[in-house]
Image (cartoon, rainbow, N blue to C red):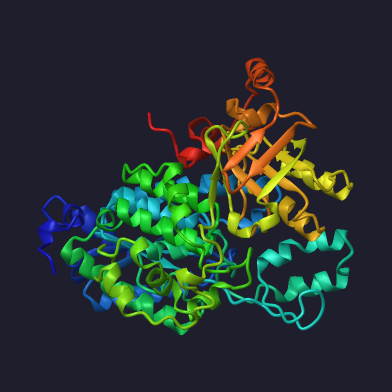
Length: 563
């Protein structure tokens, strides 16, 4: 093991002026022998509420076992974790994206305040994954991520989804199916009971599972950890190995900045595009890179998308679940198929380079993880759109859009919240051919940049997923499918054109040409923008008030502005 002089924790523990410090550790049950070893923070996000996190206390025991076996002292603490599914469709979702910054900050406070030598982070769901990566990048001490894995899908034995593998995405579409009388209340109750069978992240390629996969692509966890199911025995063994491995990183002084360089982010974006991942990954990759003073412009995402084929037909746009991806070979197999589109000389926390990892891989199913010669689409799963409606950019999950909806023109139906859209759908006030605009849902204007999943899922459930388009300055869940454009920047609250759209204005999108326009005369648009007046903040106290004043726009990753 490395010399104690190199350990941050020695500043806290050693010396004749540290009797109180040592006594406080001993009060918590630590011995002199414990304190003589490197102190490793086991950063957990377990709680009793979130299915993706309810098993992490068990996994942390195996991480600690590995640390102890390798002569380290593990010390566990917790941070917060929200369930985006439970928060969907109401005021609670305003807290979701802002929680990412709180998570990163809280970890920084604990780790810096106690001068831990390294950390292992246990995380599963949407904002916790990037929040922990942000903390690791910011602190830049030896760190390994433990993605908690996905839950298994369900397979109904009767009804609308009979014999299909389903996950939470299908369950979100149930209200629309009920409205359209495609299922009965009895079937809805049955689906409620069986769809989510146990611990883990929701099992399609949603935000949580995409960001878990990207941890692996960034080199911040062990091979296969990004797709190993939550309750698989292999997850336990990998956790123990991670506990051992963090001690080697301390010894060798291997830090997150050694893994997460510019080339690693390019690899992560490439993997994201090949998977057809969640639009939220653009926000989160930009936020993590920002901690390392690395700018990831939207142009880079689009540039990589245009040269990266879409290789995995993953739910919600396709049919396969995360368990299928894992059984086909996981992220290492996908990276092997991507070949020379990746930088393979990069270091990972496993001690192996990307090249060494993929050389050992067997691709078990080349229908699930396709070769580049048999891609689903020639280009990647995400597209950056620009135009008079989104001068600073917008994001479309093109992998989840049917070919016939790549180009769409329709009259605007303007709403100022997701709730207004849901009410309009229930009242049958949205027609085939409409272009729905949802504004004042951005990072500042929301505040909190809520996901519009309840609205988009209802559209699909009611059979309008291929006859209506939608654009918003808010976000979408990874479970959203169809022609749904998010992150429209500038947002309405900051004077973006989306804030001056009127009912009936013709809106045009062309996914292949990356266009998103409001088709009115330039002079008319400029007059509207000139007469626009900034609204007041919706929330004037508490964390969301501070968040709205500090957050940057979506095209910057919705990170806090630097002063």
